[in-house]
Length: 282
Image (cartoon, rainbow, N blue to C red):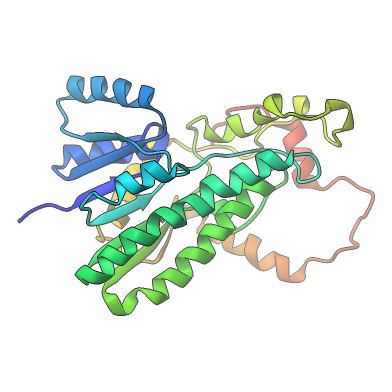
């Protein structure tokens, strides 16, 4: 039988790259979408060295021409993995950065998904996987913009899963926890490129760091592939699974949260970012 054709966006680095190469090694027809052409050249060289057949395409999910080109591809599975992480408090982050965060992580993937979903509806088969985050379920200080974008992804995906069921199109989410890919630590570096007046910032970003210990990113690949291939049929898939109770507890705590508790004192989660060192391992 023909193995499925799988399009993975944001496959130039991190989870996307690891998953794309692993699926290609398994014999799947993989289209690895990368944001810029320079990534294509580097990954083509890596594919040759590993003797892996993988199709590399420039696909900036924000670019209408790139999306139009992608809609011409015949795929069975769409993996919306492309994303960025703009760190900073909502009172400090410039509007341009905030808009870019929501556009890249939420709006652009949904626009890309629309036409593929229509094809899948016509064919009465297909699978759409959104790589969300634990930040799509709970927020932390200085990750509000990113968490907002992933909460939006969660809402889009949940609605889409109900809308497409009658057409035999599956929708699932993958919610990775904190992994040491550099993605989380770079979040606390984005302030260096802000077009603003540093003297007006409320927080001192030179003293802040990602405050959560991070896991080995290699642990994500196999569980994610099981979701992508439909071997795991759970709609929501938090990786690592041992973090499920932690996130459920954090989500439930919001129902009991009060607005006036200890006003005037720094929140412990904010203090953790001041105390943390970049690249902490779990």
